Length: 332
Image 1: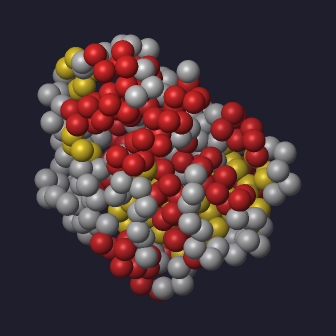
Image 2: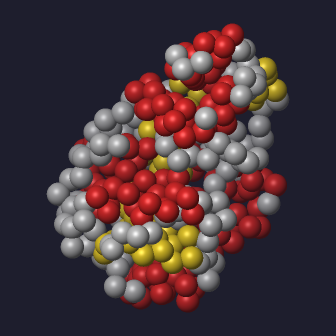
């Protein structure tokens, strides 16, 4: 991992909620390398203790096992904190369709608890994981921040409500907020197991087992796949910016290119085939389209470039090679 840290003060005390998760643990790791004090709040429902095990003996790391649905826990987590990186959420469109109530409890009620706790603790800035799902049924490409459609899933509703709450807290209470609309993030530590695993780690694990992955639909659906180090970079930029125009708004977080699921499969087969030639013989099978899926997503990252100085270092292909290498080292 080589994430450029843009002049981030090492004296800062930073709370990462969902810090034992895929994105959260990568943020914790980078902040610790920068000398920051890091508090991780996670209930380990989808996060994994093994993601933070290397940090548990670090003198600047504190793990608080707890749930953002509990306001006193959120208040405890925000004590003495300068910046909140709010990553805690229940992801997955299919999960939200199967269980909208729990998704709402975590992603809306839990998010509101964190806003209240951050406001009351005098936190300088609240930076939160928003989602490309907010674009909903908007067919325009590339996606531009101020033009969204209607949500297509309960998950998308919850992430849009997060943006509305953040804006209200900025206007009403003066809490600085920045929302980061993640587009299909992938990379090291992303869990390949479980019913709601993201497509890249799921396909990787299946190919490594010589199983044929199932592509939902005909494989033409496309995504702006975004490597984890680009996501870490923009979280850091969101912390250091002092540009008033850059605060209290939302940004797309992506590379700015789209890849179809068929193209993704071909690349994964190629990169994994370098380790195991038998993988080169595998072909996918095709299943029904998933409910709530957006056919295509492609982000404009112009706003993040202009206001935050965001310059993603990893293309989809470069990131995919890094991710495949990590999975091969860690899952075999």
